[in-house]
Amino acid sequence: MEIDAIPAWKPGKILHEGAEATVIEGSWLGSSTVLKERRPRGYRHPHLDRKLTRQRLSAEARALERLQRLGFPCPSIIHLDQQRGQILMSRIEGFPIYSLLKDGKAGTKQLEDLGSLIRRLHESGVSHGDLTTHNIIASADLSLSLIDFGLSRQSPELEHLGLDIQVLNECLKASHSTIEDAIDYVCKGYSEFASTGSEAEDAEHVIERFRKITTRVRYHG
Image (cartoon, rainbow, N blue to C red; front, top):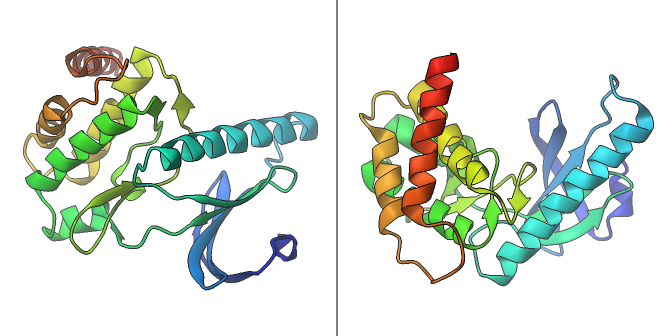
């Protein structure tokens, strides 16, 4: 990992080491940051692997830049190096809502807030692609932010919007089954979000598509 190429960045410990990327905490000019580095995949042809890495980093960076301009709660980009597969971002302070839901420190109110946040994301013209409770950060006052936009899309189709809710639904059922009808609280917040009048799909159309996806998954599963 060629971290010396990032001016003024001081690395800390590894936060996450996944199949696609390694995430390291650190500081940049006194600010708390995280570095995400996509690793080469040995089973891919090197040329294809580099191409996919550049495409995914570029998509993530464009989504974050767009959301940052709109004041959406997500990391901001500090440094991008497509050749090395690196993106340095501001660190969102707080805890994954995964642990807070498990401990009972967050509940149905936060799920409704999450639904509103997802609607706000969609109205910004972005779908997340990996909406699990590990990628939702709650601050000390339980306000929510989203992280890890590696699978995000700009100008998403209705199917991608419905899939965002479906991915979260599967996560809630698998990891937070003690919260009865958890996804219904998310959908309530999504539906009741005060629309900004954007050209995004109507909230009810998105939820209807999510329900159809759920039926398809159940039928084929």
